[in-house]
Image (tube, rainbow, N blue to C red; front, side):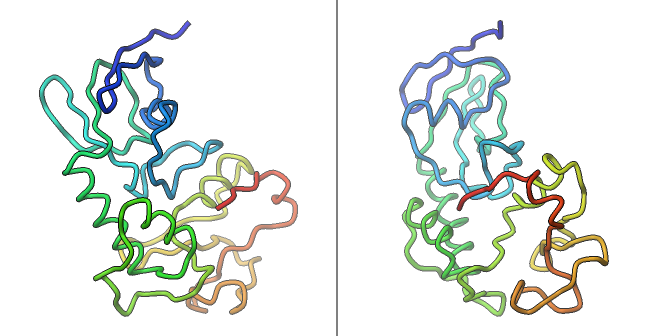
Length: 200
């Protein structure tokens, strides 16, 4: 039986299993945090940075992504401290500036207290179905289909989700936000049944 650890979340004392992830304990208290990259059937990655919390470990405070932060000792957690709220708002505002019309981005921004963005630029994509680079398709392909067909190459503003093999045929209708020089994401029919549906 897994060892139990006592932690405090927003003033509430709770007992959680050692090495369990912090986000689960937070959600069990009924506290809703915005998350973009997290999914219950995928290994947490902490990519989107929206689920960030402030953790006090032996008197030292730090910001952590709660989805992939394993609880291993007594900690005090704040899910909505001034530092957390400021961080979350800036991150949400950046997402909203990049993908202003994508429903899940609008929802996460609203949860973070953001309704408009200062960060619109040449990278802003007005497409309602734009890829928001959450990485869930990549992890789903790797963890369920046991394939490494999908990747997120490059860094920063150049990152995009693409396939690694030539048997994907790029089409503008499938991925209008991806340059035609790079093949867009396309999953083989034999793989579809192996990957669970990941609802937005």
